[in-house]
Length: 302
Image: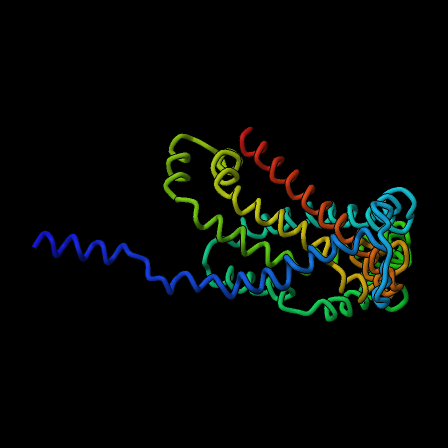
């Protein structure tokens, strides 16, 4: 009997060889659509290839040097992208957390409001761009009409026509677009916090702020890390929203790295665009690592 039980346990713990085939489709897709194009980008980034000619020359690190030191358009796009990312990450994370705290309970009204705030996420970027073009129109837009109706004519603006502030108005559109999606992640994190912790802290006399600081914030730190990292990557991928609001090509005040790289490809500078793309990837990686370190330090100080 004991032999039969031991044999059964061995069979139960043995992994069928066919299970090793399950990751294969994902691995093939990763290699074909990410690993191979990345290696090709590295290869072309040190050439002057125009994307059409069979021959090209090796230029070493000249493309990287020119992008970092001699290309005002690339530096302007990087600056705009950093401004855009800073506004989106701060506002989107803050508003998403605030909405999640207010709507974490599964009441009928809360669920309805969650669906309402999540609705913009299911829209296409082009649709969102058309909506906000209507809002930002300086003559007939909803924004200036509303300000005029409440007597705040002095705050009326040309919005996207103001080069100094245009990137910030697009950032607000991006926040509206994705705040509901991030709210759902925060709600999932909040609902995973054990209620016993709040009950015990209430018995000890802890107020709402103390509960948030010592219980809620540390417990939702994993969700916060995901939200911040995902929002950062979204900020660098706002290609279609920028083109929808700023046209193609966008003005320098609305140019970000993804639109700048696209313009370089269109100009048949494939080698130079490949170098810009690699710098783009390194910048995202560096910012994501820095954010993870910062959030880790924040959690450690709580």
